[in-house]
Image (tube, rainbow, N blue to C red):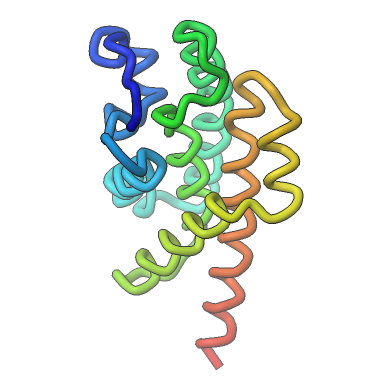
Length: 159
């Protein structure tokens, strides 16, 4: 069970860190956070690639602060409900992804698999890096792994 601090509904910083409240789901908050990340992705996906990448950088920098501040405020380093990192990780996965529901589902599944299984160095980052950067880094790495595999699948299926 996910013990959600009441501040999530009162503090805008906590609300954002909890993925607009999606991290307050009673189970699998990371999955619900990733699902919620799809909604703004539909808008992000309409942007030029340079603007999309710029917004990922901004969302990452904001996320380091948001997640670190929220973790400090609630006294739990990487509370399961803090899912802004899932938003950014999913958006990284979907960089230059082809249009279509199949690609969206593939990106979602790949990101969740890498985020859950945490192959090296994701698991190392999850355990060794602290603060807001530590909260964000494992999902950034999972997003990069998922992005690379998604793009490989795109190339293979194009031939």
